[in-house]
Amino acid sequence: MNYDIAPPQASTFAPKVDALFYVISALTAFFTIVVFALVLYFAVKYRKGSKADRSNIVHDSHKIELAWSLPPLVLGLGIFAWGAQVFIEMRTMPKDAIEIFVIGKQWMWHVQHPNGVRENNEIHVPLGKKVKLTMISQDVIHAVYIPAFRAQYQVIPGRYTSLWFEPTKEGKYPLFCNMYCGTQHSEMGGYVYVVKPDEYAQFLERGGDKKKPGAPTSLVERGKELYTKLNCMGCHELNDNVRGPSLHGIAGQKRKLVKGELVTADDDYLRESIIRPEAKIVNGYENTMPQDYKGQLTEEQIRELLEYIKSLTGKSASVTPTPNEGMNP
Ligand SMILES: [Cu+2]
Image (tube, rainbow, N blue to C red; front, top):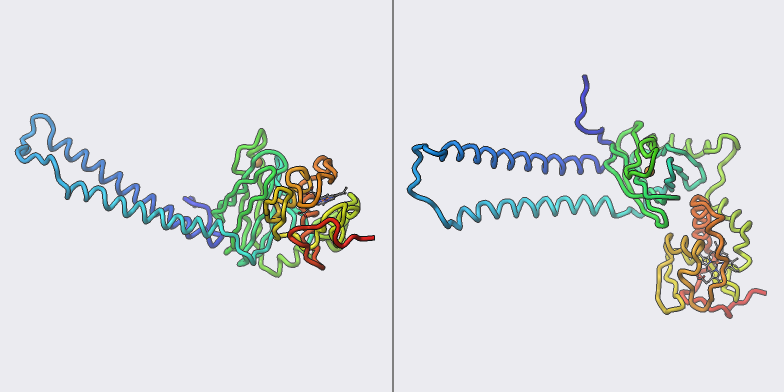
């Protein structure tokens, strides 16, 4: 019978995490054995009535104290440095990664690829390419866990979190929810498919929606449709105007708020600006944006709007929008 003590190693992180884990386990086992062996040895040697020599009792010995303090200190700090290094690598998102959007909801995983292909409880990823998951929950706290990649991170309502990995082995690997999230938590899982880059390209081309054949509609296109439908452009135009600031080129830029505070227009800021416009008011404006988008939008749709806003360039908006400047007729 084939009995694996660990899942397959299918990402660049896997050997690194495993090496650290096995070294820590070996050190723990080593010291446990040494301590127990010495306890047993001395218990037997100095048992009541034994003839062991008890004349030279040592009360203070700096040598012995240093011998049991320094090596564990060095080992402990070494493990800390090594672990921190692996951790920092895992938590530093590469800039050149393929971004895939994951939404957790009781009790399934909903996946959107940037070109609009959707999957449920399955994620197709290309072999040997860096992949970044941008994740959010529609309800409670979940966690994406892919044991074969040694990758795990929380998926939280109201905030985007991310996770990255680089698959190194083709195959089908289990995906789990790793945060108890209700009755069917244990069923909230699926598979990650690591395929060759050209197969991944074909997968994206085939499109996700089997009911509506044809090229998939990208997130940006879907975002644009929503933007029109919800009449965002009634207030947001190419230039700042009295009704609203321009959204062109604001993504990733600094925005000045009414209280003078500067914030970066990252995904969380843009998301909050849409569903809780009252939270941060842009300098020069008042809280006049409609407050009821929250109830109308799913996390998928918010993502689509964000992708559309991020695609709006053409001109870069000023850090301090001025409602009177560049009035559109
Ligand atoms: Cu869950």
